[in-house]
Length: 346
Ligand code: 13P
Image (cartoon, rainbow, N blue to C red; front, side, top):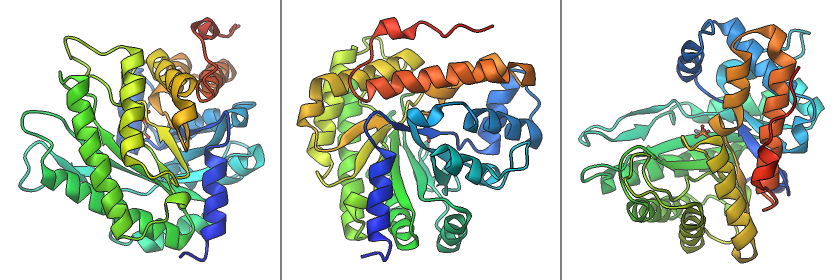
């Protein structure tokens, strides 16, 4: 049992407090730059910093966002006024989170599949991040659905790494967000996705047990059970909500502190609708809170509006706040399409 056990329980509970979710803004420099390039934003450290400041200083964001996941570059940065981002967050009432994985690399012997790296030196990095003010961490594993994949090898290798990461986090005082993402790319059916998600979650929880991870001191960040992006007969919102909850109820121990979904390339509206129906229809069956930890589905509208132009910062913040609010409502099953009406911009 970690000496941090009670603190970890409290943090995990706060991360999934009613009506709130976790904002993912931990894009690596490579990923952030790709999103900037598409919009003609200079891919400099200063523009990444300015964008992250826009997010973290959004007025009222903590009404719907309990904490945000930062990237290593961001956790070391300061606002224009010279205040460390970690302090900006703490002052605004948001918990500091940090991505600690080193990214997914090709898995030897398994063409088309990846394994997430970053265990070497992780204990020391966790200690440094804790000192800087971080209280939770994230590690993302990716599972690809395709011709005869995922292999058992890929699922087990990723589950093992997730469990070792989670155990190290709890030892060092960070709540682990355990993120096994089954990718949405492909033309697979929702049934294919259910089968793969089921196998993946089973393997992940077996490994977490083996590595003595405390379930009440962790957050699961799963993908939804959903049809592939190019599936000719995509499932509807009700089916996604029902099959996702069914898969979670089958695999996730009741003591897990909370569930916070990734958006995974779904549209903004769909990400919100799916979460809403899960809560509106199935919350009574769920022993855990079911909320969001979206990146693209919260940030994208604001980023596209901002486009690197500082004159547009405060309007972009309104768009970000709006999406956070809608997802906050969805986490309570209180969202409806009427609420989509965009905020008035000057
Ligand atoms: P998306 O919501 O854009 O899928 O990102 C969530 C995340 O943190 C991926 O690791």
